[in-house]
Image (cartoon, rainbow, N blue to C red; front, side):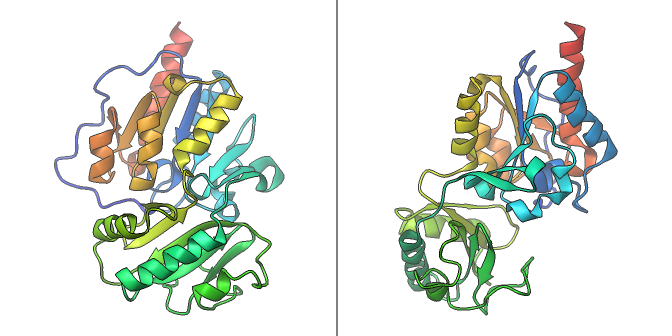
Length: 294
């Protein structure tokens, strides 16, 4: 979820063609997209989100973050108050402190199959288990943003039926390798363990995120939109990393941030400024201006 390093010769932030005049929903990633590098929401972005809601456009935060890390934006949700977390594994109500509305878990036996397969294919891989009740991890797993009070044990124990928190659904499995190139690790994992879960990545390090088969930002966003009678053509989406790709390709209009991963830049229909330049806000302002001008 940390933004990729900004690259030279980044395409200009102006969109290549006009966005739809009246989109009904904006779906935006957080880290590297809506949030600045210090993990804050700028005043300009806060104002743009509020303007979109006043113009009748729903805004969904769609992130790899768990619900417990949503405080940074919980004050800026309007109307429905919902957010899609853990790469589509959970829909939560931020008006109710992150209360889960829908959970699409990774089955423990499938997660165990991923662990077994990656241990053999990529020795040195360490794992963490993100459950609805918190994160649990192996001793070798790097100390990114971990709960010091969490249980530390081999992944096989963390995924066992007898584990103390086994009643909390597994939202995603995290797999880290200390040496492999991130995109190469992703390709390897998909090739050897793709039958057991959906693999993606959002970190600049070799850290993979594994969801249940068919679970992604795109599939859960599509479900939320269908419940509202909103079609893909009425959705504008923003993102920067591989875990955003399916969502960006599903949405009728997609924007890559200037700091985006090369695959995201190649897959999207439009470009906007970097997350440090309020790129999402700039597009929302243009959309709202067109709506008010009608």
